[in-house]
Image (cartoon, rainbow, N blue to C red; front, side):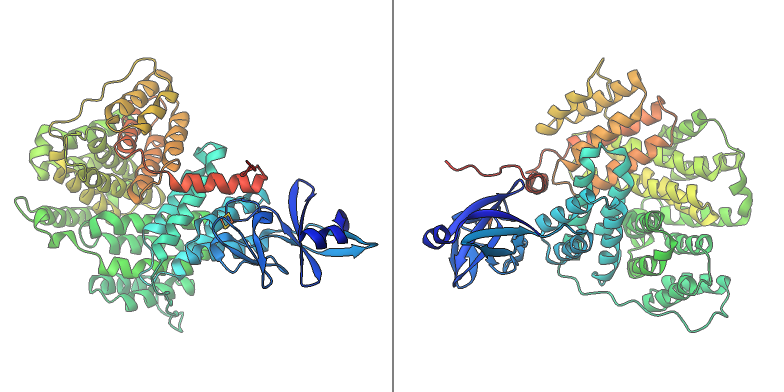
Length: 577
Ligand code: FES
């Protein structure tokens, strides 16, 4: 072991504390109880110098927020502060030597710290663990996997907003500037930690001890048990299907989405969105994680509010009845509708505008017919889903700021739901999912008054994406943010810098659930259209408007992550006056 001379024993004994340097680290050497101890001089909480602290009863107490550290191990008695690194000390020939053990792989310890940060809601600890893991070369997917395991275990109700945000951030990560990626990951994990706080653990049910039940029967059981809200029976059925390999991925996905569309627009669209996000999470983790991930959806799906139970879906228009008759029509035509040869992108966009047009705007049956006619005319299921998602996205792009501010969430729900249906149709099209698209059309119809009058999107000429920064700093910049993005895309056509700029703005704020969903869905939908196309520009302009309507915030989480980053880099966070 290398040693650094910190001074003479006499000096240490007479002063009680010495400060030396080990590499670039300040180290505080303490004389206590007849022997020497050494710990990093930088408090792991916010970086203040520990040599300004107090030693008493074997504990070093930091003066700033009074975190206490065991002198022997550096372990903290106050977990908000994290442990401080301790060094072995040797006395040789009257000199105090601080020893530096050879470095070892920090990954196992960092994963433990990540778990502790999540368990105890300590965002700083979570942030430091994530930054350390990424510095150590661990892939972001490792932290995502840890988070998904944590979230599906420590929330009795199963899949919720936290796992959705974490998956959305995992999806968005490659499109963000490299400097924003750690922050995005920390946002997702911190949100997950808050979403599990105070919830009991979830204890999964074991599969049935048989492989004799066919996938068809398991699918039928699952839908029946969700229909009758018997979540334990549904969970055990699902566990049997995936745990014993009785049903493959495609079959499982199809029957889970069938159950999520057997009733209308479950839980304001969240159920289908959560189901889609769980399958997206499995794209990051691999199908092996399915037995842990998918059963976490069951309780939410079984207990979800069914929109046919809501007055707004029954009067003055019987939207639930329309959904039922459309479902019958889809079922009678069967797989024919899944085999469309495809149409031009212009026709897909035209269908979206037709759904918003004067006729469909007044007549929900006409809106549903427009979708079914499109399918008959050769739209692929993907194109049908994309048209609905564009129509729902345009509700945001055309949302007038004179509406109640809370109604941004109403149009957001339609858009993220439609995005989820579209993503699921891309992965694994089915007639049942087309029912989900019909529900999306009806939701777009329901929200029509939030575009009366429709906001006019005016492109700003020759804009600079840097001009967006001012839009996040002050209220009332909704239309300007939309105009900058729209104008920039019409001029340059490349969505990547815009998506990165919107992602940067998102993670720079104390963003809320719906913001993560909106930005990620807009990025997904924009990329489904050709670069330079009008729908792409309109969708991203809508996301910019949504963000600008909610910024600025206090930006506490980004500030915490900045501190964690500087602590890791060894920057000076404190200067003696
Ligand atoms: S407890 Fe040391 S800086 Fe906060």
